[in-house]
Length: 418
Image (cartoon, rainbow, N blue to C red; front, side):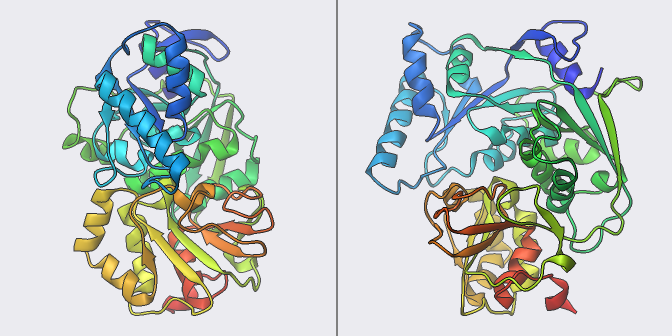
């Protein structure tokens, strides 16, 4: 069996599972946020169940429109909080929270071997820990809150092998953008994407979270890494319960094996309006921009902010644009503060926000007007994703985003650091 199949077999009480098989799977963590939780709560009420199956396994995080941006978002957050208090669920209020997919691993709530479902498509982020994480609809989440189980089809697995040593400014964001550019936004449709090879072995955990996070942008059901010493070191001091590490069998059957030599890979930029519309930085051309966003559940971790600070420290944000930096959690914010990164950002002329999904979904803290262009470290650049349907979003890694903020156009970090 593949890694995904091993985890699903263990959580469904079976010796073996195969792609296409329908199974009832026990879940270890159920997640919802301020947009999706109210829908799940309404559906939960319809089931006629008084209590959730296990309050310690259900996590709710106000992160999309929080701190509340208007009356409607305040009502959403209030409904979620009241349900949390009624049921005794795990909850992170503003001031102690973060973007859900940054927060849960950081707090040790997701561990290797877990099955994690969330009412958010980027729940696949947790595959970086050797867990099976996937997004589901709010009705499925309601049933999982009541029963502790989900019903799903076992996905086939595609193995992606990355050979070579990555260049200075190339990281997990570039690997996953390059992959999506190669296979397309439906290239891994309802498949588990298993990432292996010396290039991904060399990635820090933050880079792995980025890759797993964007598996959904290739249509993937999950994006999963094998557990190694880096994973174990990351979870060692965070884990508050025992966990089981699974490994794929040597004779595991993959539906496809795709190999890349990434030793000469450049930083990648996804042009509007698809994450698959990818070009290397040397082929971007002269594209002036109005906004830069550095953050999100894709690239809002400490390594991402360090990378941006290498470019912005001692420099200045171009007077023709705004640069918005959003740490992924309160802990990331605090660590960035202690490391002098926040000071560097503010002196450079950037604004630093409290943790929020905010502009990624066109919520607030950076909504675009018609005709405006943004370079963003987020995960999607669909039409109208960040505001006006007549705006444009370009996806890139934090170093490219920071260099673009300085030069006022989409730029390579090499132009700043030569």
